[in-house]
Length: 226
Length: 315
Image 1 (cartoon, rainbow over the protein chains, first blue to last red):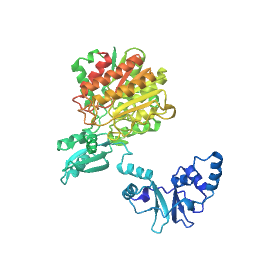
Image 2 (cartoon, chains in turn cyan, yellow):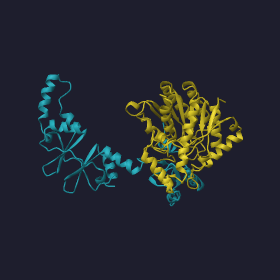
Image 3 (tube, one colour):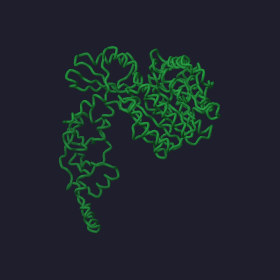
Image 4 (cartoon, chains in turn yellow, green):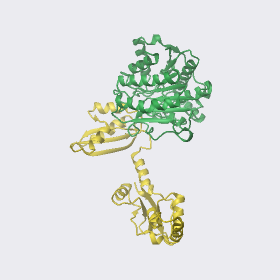
């Protein structure tokens, strides 16, 4: 799943010579925390964040008069003076998994998406990413989550899928948690149905261990010392 | 207490595909249990009639009602989702289920009986205004609440839904409404169907504060249920002061029911029964109409329903 399918393409951009006053207005009107900065040709040259903007504002400890005067002066400055130049970007060929890894390792809240020539194509915020994962996990649709413990031997997932298929039920997603109990794995199929009784019965009959998803989760928490 | 009981042979004629958990054997098992137990003799039987479409329209869109009728008469295998398996009689059965609830309401409001249990199917609490979901077609309880308001002039209706699944349909019908309080205790939506009913869903605009959800995690049993009912349901209802209480009575939270991951015991269910019925007796002068929703383990369902009815009778 490429970011090009989930990124925000309804772009609000500014030019390097845009005033802080105008940029601040755009951020407020659209409730955005990031504004990509592009040149006349549409190439990305920087990004300005609400944090950059706050850093540029006068101290709130100043008197009202002093604050007002300084504020007006600050607002006449240009975006190019406060923006992050050559910001971290991702390519339109990045997957949402790549994006997740990048956002996790670098401390950024949004990533401009550019094509091979550096032209801005979209922006991917943490909120866009969360939406994409809700979609991947299929949890926007009604369903039931099972938690099945299996031995680490090939063919286990097939047996589960066969049972689900026999019951004519669609899967929203399947998560597999590795390193469960050394030789075991936990499989979490999200089934798009209310009708899980028959599937559970068949799984039990085939010797699968249906565990309580909460127990699995709690077991993963670090044990308290002493 | 004089307890009314709604049942009609028609309720057996909605026949989903073989092996579907929401099957007519559920009601047969319940009836047999009540007869064997000797409870049936003490119940006041109420005769259902098909509901007039005007009452269905207080909740569902006309086009949805027609679409459902057509799907059944064309002999389609299911409606809106493969979970909702139908036959040619499903539409008439669903009309009769609503009609049964309306009959029970009339009997309680006319003081013919003190309270009533409706052994109806198909169930209703997942049914949305324009969509069938989770074995439900017409929202029996939601229509009942509207009927209480429009036919009987009741101002405040309290709904308690203890089916293990969240009653998304009922919540959505009333989430803007401050005259109907919807309370639901159910398995947490991250694990269980239909994926709604989180604590932060509390109603919208003037309805804010009139929806209350107590999601419980898989593996939860009697202790958690007791705690949630005491801290969430009881104070909310004492403040709201419903004039009539409708129950969406689901028995699928039982430890032996494979439809859920909760572990309520038979004794735990007794506690739920006692709590909700005591509350209704105290606040709503005992005016309770209890409507069957889920409960799919045919071995335990008859006992749970019998215990529930015994509590309604004041035993």
